[in-house]
Image (cartoon, rainbow, N blue to C red; front, side):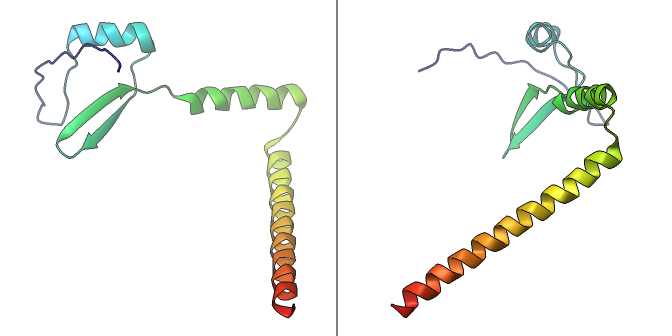
Length: 110
């Protein structure tokens, strides 16, 4: 069983749905999460859970753009490769489904 400290704070929900995190909470989260611009709010019945959310998509997009520039790959290249990969996967699925149908027919014929 994990031991963890539970703290409660009173916060006021403002007219436009805004609330202010108490300073001790902000400081604690800033130490762990760094950037608190975005958070995730989970609602379970009448309970709310607010957690720091890292935006990995933004960082990933930067890494992809950097790699594309480094290698000279264009967006058109990526889209063309995606279309080819989809076609390959589609063919593999059709062949797999056809092989399954053949095995079923062989079993039924025995």
